[in-house]
Image 1 (cartoon, rainbow, N blue to C red):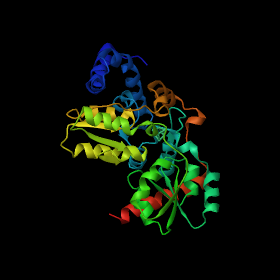
Image 2: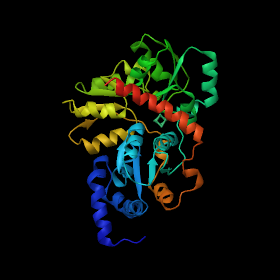
Image 3: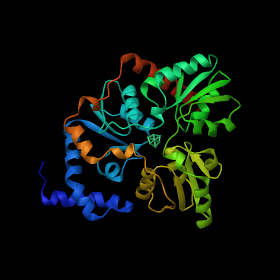
Amino acid sequence: MEFSNSQITKETDRLFKNLSKTNWSKSDCKIIAPITLEINKLKKEKDTIILTHSYMTPDLMYGIADFIGDSYGLSKLASETKAKTILFCSVYFMAETAKILNPKKTVIVPAIAGCSLAESITPEDVQNMRKKYPTAGIVCYVNTSAAVKAECDVCCTSSNALKIIEAMPQKKIIFLPDALMAKNLQPLTKKQLISWHGTCIVHEEFSPKTVDEIRIEYPNVKILAHTECNPAVIAKVDMAGGTEGMIKYIENTNTKKFMLVTECGLTDRIKVEYPNKQIVGSCALCPYMKKIMLKDVLQVLKSPRKDQIIDLPADVMKKAKKSLDRMVKIVEKSK
Ligand code: SF4
């Protein structure tokens, strides 16, 4: 696709307005301008909505996305649009959730990207846990495959996990697959949590020492961490929660300086969307999320390969939807 010099200049300026806040130069923006122009033109022609997770790179979030957010929030949002196709820039299990919640729409992914948490457990593992602990309820975090969700009683997100655990009738709860999140939740509930051994390779890397060092260097800083981090880290921070919870906290707190103990995509979002707030310390990159690039988005939009179209067996969709619906019912009832 050919674009005129004035179209490229206009697009470069549009990109630079946001991307400059994450250290992109004008010439970097000029290089990607023809690609973002083509993607934005094609997505309209192909009646496609582009969702990008907050852990994507800034060129995806601010160059081509219609919506940016967390996995479950984006999937729900997708149900409200009329677009025929959902292009989900995220790891694979998130696109599966979008398909479960939007069965009539075509859901496509730019790359087949895994996740250390989702890949730590199979449906057979869940069945074996059920056999081993027949009286326990099974709660699974949304960071699981559709097939695993289908074997659980109810799903949860990082923000409603405790609410879901408390609402279950059983005293014993199998909490899957994040071992560290289960450890963070155990002191908050009287129920007995039985955990799996999955971890997020991004969040498990942070150490309490880093938090201590940042507090010494920036005495007025507020430190926020994802609940996928180690309990020793969580014990030292001002707030622990999921992506959207962290954004709300920053929005509603007068403090200017924050450290985000999480993936770098969220740090980029804060730099762009809350320019009056300062981010200190370092973040971590998710190798799975960062697999997705603009060129992949263009390719899948032009002509998706079979493996880029989410296709789930009907029984898995039905059972996984039940787990997600139960979560929504519990959350709605508690309002
Ligand atoms: S950040 Fe962690 S949980 Fe999220 S996709 Fe990457 S590995 Fe999975």
